[in-house]
Image 1 (cartoon, rainbow, N blue to C red):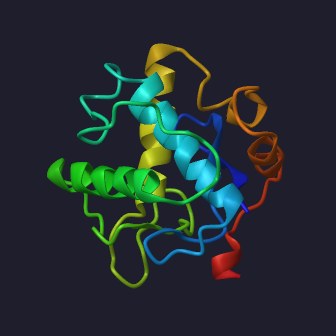
Image 2 (cartoon, rainbow, N blue to C red; image 1 turned 60 degrees about the horizontal axis):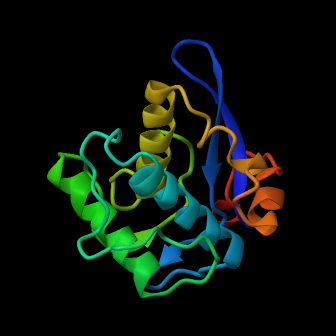
Image 3 (tube, rainbow, N blue to C red; image 1 turned 180 degrees about the horizontal axis):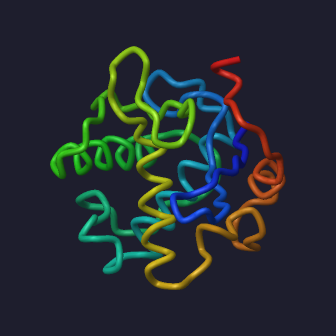
Length: 166
């Protein structure tokens, strides 16, 4: 189940970030709340921040905003693959495996592949771009009425570690 975690930024300010308990993608567990989280972050990053997200464009052929419904399918997979490809093209060390694994902690690299967690990078992109635009689309995710109640409820749970790593 998706959840929130808090951290202290370099400025000393308390920040909230969002994580999944299980993997989302090609061979992921694809639990409903975890898929909703990934979809919600894509909605913010690619569509609500379009033009303000440092030239990250939605996947080619994406003509509609991604639906936050918690069902993993070809549209969600296209966004996952596209984001990983864009991150790599910008010099980020990301494993292009079509999966968003939960991150162990913000900013950490995978202990196996030694690459950054794409979900962590997507969180960073949403948080930083929203902060630059002085909007709370990301920081207020758990309270947004346009997000499913199931996701809002899940994100009210605060913990440090994804169940995958417990």
